[in-house]
Structure formats: C-alpha cells, structure tokens
Amino acid sequence: PLATRAGMEILAQGGNAFDAAVAVSAALSVVEPYSSGIGGGGLWLLHRASDGFDTLVDGREYAPGAASATMYQDKDGNVIPRASMDGPLSSAIPGMPAALVYMAKKYGRLGLARDLAPAIKLARDGFPLDQRFHDRLVGKQALLQRWPAATAVVLDQGQVPAVGWLLKQPDLADTLELLAKQGDAGFYQGKRAQQMVDGVRAAGGIWTLDDLRQYKVVERKPLTGDYHGMHVVSAPPPSSGGVVLIEILNILSGYDLAHADPVQRIHYVTEAMRYAYHDRADYLGDPDFVQMPLRLLMSPDYAAGLRATILPDRATPSSALTSVSMPQLGNNTTHYSVLDKDGNRVSGTVTVNFSFGSCFMAPGTGVVLNDEMDDFSSKAGVPNGYGLVGNSANAIAPHKRPLSSMTPSFLETRDGIAILGTPGGSRIISMVLLGSLDFFDGGDARSIVSLPRYHHQYLPDVLEYEDGAFTDAQVAALQKMSYTLADHGHWGNMQAITWDYKTGKVTAAADPRGIGTGEVH
Ligand code: GLY
Image (cartoon, rainbow, N blue to C red; front, side):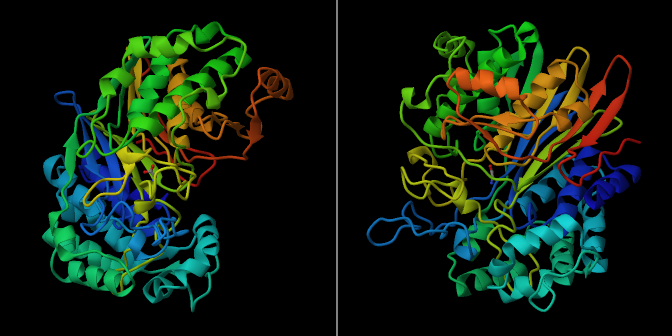
C-alpha cells in the first residue's frame, strides 16, 4: 500500500505513468526489499498513448565479468548446494537503478529526483513493519544474521522485530539520494560502487568496478500475439514470459473454450501449458547471447501441429515429449500496473529473486543484493533452487542475463484494455494466461486477480491447483484422464488494471492473496 501511495502521489503532482512506475519501484525497494529492489532488476512494459508506442525496458541483472559456466560446481563437477542462492557470490549486477534513471529521463515528466522523493522519505522516516514483512524475516532470519550490515538494518539486535516496529533505512535513503542527484554515476560509479565492490569481494563475491560501470539498460521490442482478436503485448527474452504466453494462446485459439465444459477447458489449457513450458526449457535464454527460434515458437502453424497431438480425453505424459529441462517455481518478485489520465501504461515486474535475494547487504549501502544468478543453469541437467534443469541456452557467461519468467503484459480488445502481471516464478506465466482468458471472457481487474489458479509446467508432470480451484468431481474427472493432481494452497500476487471503453470504467485491483492496494482517482 505504501508503494501504491508513492505512485499516486507522483501522479497527483502531474507525473505520468512512467514517473509513477519509477516512484513505485523505488518505494518497493524500501517497503518490500524481500521481493524487489534497487539491488535487483526488472522488466517494464511501457505504452505511450500519444503515438501508441510499446516498448520493454530491460533492467534485468547481468552476470559479473568473472562469472563462468562452472562457477557453482566443485572440483569434481558437482553443483555446490545453495552456492548460487546465498551470499554475494549469488548476486548478479543490479539493473534496477539504471532502469529507473533511464525511464525517468526518457519517458517521465517530473525528473528522477522528484520520482525518487517518496521512497527516500519512506527510507529515512521509516514505516511500521507489517505482518508479511515480519513473516519473511522469520523465514530468512538465519541467512540475514550471517551478514552484519543486513542484520543491523532489518533485524532488531539480531532478532526479528515485532509487527509495528518502525523500520528506518538511513543508508538506503542516502543511496537513493545519490542516485537522485547523480543518476547512474551515483550507483554504478564513485563511493557507492566502491562500497558495494569492497563489501561483495570481502564476503566471497566476484564483482568489479568495471562490471558496475559497464551495466546498460536495453530497450527491446515487445512480443505480440493475437487470441481471437485480443491483441497481446508481452515481455520478450531474456524473459520466457511472452513466448510461452503467446504459444499457449496460439494452441488454445483452435478450441472453442467458451462452449467447452469446465473439465474439457482445464484439460486443453493444461495441455497447452505443458507443450509451451517444454519449449521454454529447451530453447530460451539471453537474446544477446543465444539464437532462439522465436518466430517458429510463436507461429500459429507450429501451434496447430502441437494441437493435433493433444487427445480430447487424455493427458499427454510429459515423458512422451523430448527430454529437456524443468522450469522454475518460486513466489518472490513483485508486480505493479499503472495507467495515467492520458492513457500511458506501465506493466512492471521487479525482483531480487528469492526472499531477500542473497540476504547480503554491503556495509554502508542499505541495499539488499539479489540472488538472480540462480536463474541461470549452474550445470546442464542439474536442478537449480526452483527445480530448474537448464541447458546451454541458459548457461552462465560473463555479462549474460539469466532467463526470467516475468510476464508484464498488456491485453487489448475493441472493448478495452488490461494491464497485468504477477510474481511467482514459473507460475507467473500460467497466472497471466488464466488472467488473459478471464479478461477475454469479460472479467475486470478484480475478477482477474481473484481467479482460482492451476498450473502445469511440463515437469514435474503434475497439475497443481489452488485450494477450491477444482470441485471434487472435476478432480475425479481429471484423474480419470490420467492427470496427477496436487493441491498447492495458494500462490501469486497479481496486480491488474482494466479499462472498459464502453462504460469508461477503470478498475484497479490487488490480489486478495497479498497486501497490495488498487486505487483509482
Ligand atoms: N527471478 C525470477 C524470474 O525472473 O523469473
């Protein structure tokens, strides 16, 4: 809610959606550092209303220059458990600070200093610790306690503070102020860069000043698709999100889902997920490093070929597909959606990867560093922290971006638009898919974020569903079709906006599973 307030404050000051996105991202760094922050990265899908221009700002982290494909393996070639997840050796070079500077300058109206002001105030004055933050601290207390700087900032004398405790982050306020005053140089060069490199290296990491100095935001052309006339705009690689979403929708385009009975619909949607997640695992990585058959994967003809192999009454065993890697799970990361009065839009998904990222903070910086290196494949065939078994497309290389599942998206029909996205690792894509189908069926933002969810990602060959998503009769019918099912509680934290052109109504909604807020003024 405090990040939403920061965004609304900037809109009220005359900022546009892009200014608001910068303000929200920076505020999330302060109030939700377990999910995202300036020590991590993100992907921001932008729509400029004046000329209809869509673009993706890629502020994804990249690997340090000294990184190598085998850096998380011991001398016998075995992957060292958790080496790519804990401490500064797991941290890639942050992209978010550069992305905030870039967006404020190129697309914003108010200037970086004004956009960052609400976050700086939140960090300096503090805010009362909420239950969610408290629970995340409990989960990561032991890892945070390893690092004195992190311990001093987010713990109270080494212990998890009570809900309501005033959390002040003066070092983070100073870091954000340096960024506000000096732009990129305030973070990627000078005093802060030196502190981060010194802190990281003293604790076993491999960052250099050159790694920070050379980091660059990349602006990329979003991927587009069509589902029965609904225009889909989504994230290109280094995210797998847009490719997988569009491939699934292409497969589903050949079915009459509107008239299918619920079990039949779940079956087709699940089969389409299985095939597209299989391709994700096989082909995708950083586009600046690997060649990918994107046109093929997103072609309607290719989808038709896959559809022809789907039986109407039987699950396809994943073992029948060529053997490749397993995508990721996970629940961290953050999403927000912004629409301003001129129709500019932002769909922003931001992350430090696992909860509190690496749990490492370089002394004097206040910045929680990510553990995004775990989104790479540490060794072909060996699962990462989320169960990922990658191949060479997503192997570690110096200054390469790890493959993401973040799926910030826009949907456009003749009747309106939706802006949506969510955290949730590999489940991000299936959540955005279900939200997209709901929007197509007439759902507004509230309906999209509240939908019961289900997910299949090729491997493990299990159809996961949220409590209450399927009736007992549906579970039995799906089992009869040879599905293995698992009830996985709840997942995701979707934030969506819909705008109905006919009624003019704008709806902003936060996932009832989280603590966010949707505000319309
Ligand atoms: N770190 C999660 C993702 O980018 O998919």
